[in-house]
Length: 140
Image (cartoon, rainbow, N blue to C red):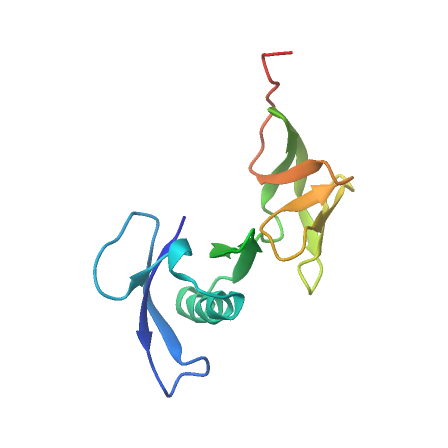
């Protein structure tokens, strides 16, 4: 989970500027995180401001009425596919559609984004996960 320090700026294109980003829990004036967003549009504004601040892409996500801003997947990121405790490497991200709806790996596997969530699925079952993992659920 990311924490963003934001300030209102009437001269910025989205009226919000991000002045800091942290992976650590932050308290204090101006710090917001996933439970701070009251709409998808609010998350969109923070994602755009965070992208401008950090020089990397952030995207807004929505799942079950909760909004979040996450770092977008990037071409050449190592990835795996996973389901129910099993995970298998599937190369690197080869391409990402302009709309972020489709991700293709170097092994030819295609993942499709589920609505505006931060989840990409292959065959509506296998989730795209960051990093190379080869694990099997020991309960089977």
